[in-house]
Amino acid sequence: MKIRDVQFVKSAVKPDQYPEYTVPEIAFAGRSNVGKSSMINTLIQRKDLVKTSSRPGCTQLINFFLINDDLSFVDLPGYGYAKVSKKIRAAWQPMVETYLSNRPNLLGLVLIIDIRRDPQEEERNLAQWLISNHMPFLVVLTKADKLSKTQQQKRAAAISSQMNRNTSEVILFSAKTRVGREIILDEIANLITW
Ligand code: GTP
Ligand code: MG
Image (tube, rainbow, N blue to C red):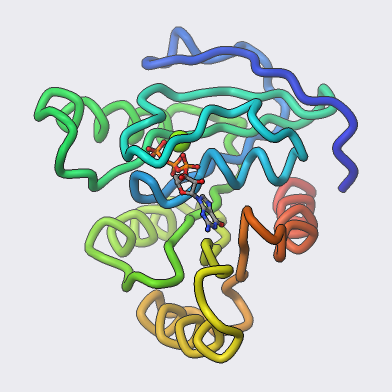
């Protein structure tokens, strides 16, 4: 897939604020600070179109991006960050769950996990929900640059088994080295042509 043009469309909290377009949509989900926004920047080859931060809880709204006028990427706020206020934490789940259940053009999700961390209840619950709702998803292990090649393979084997996937079904990625970028774009292209 070649990315020619990218536009930030809008931020939203609830369904009547989502963009009205019906192009195929792919959402990026994962723990706070895992690197969702950085991954989108790497995929679209724009350094700072999507705001990123070393401070967790950076993305707090649902952000919509239109790619080539015929594909939509959605940057979701992260889950599982203990230090944001109770109010923000309480808002996350309904906001994201409502989005996942009320977006007919959502065709797939990229579930992003830090390669150095074991998946937790949140990742397992989300994967289970996606499977029950027949929503295809990619599992991407990010921040691969933080580990040696040998460690990357070990972690990929451990995490894939915890997520009940084959090792070949998880993708190694780094926003720093861009490893995995082409594979993710190809897999997204596969998801949307289903
Ligand atoms: P929230 O919006 O808070 O949920 O975070 P996020 O998942 O969007 O993470 P974000 O992209 O803002 O990145 C968080 C931090 O991790 C930033 O300091 C990034 O520079 C860093 N980061 C993201 N991806 C990578 C990566 O692949 N390698 C390395 N070394 N750092 C990364
Ligand atoms: Mg973010």
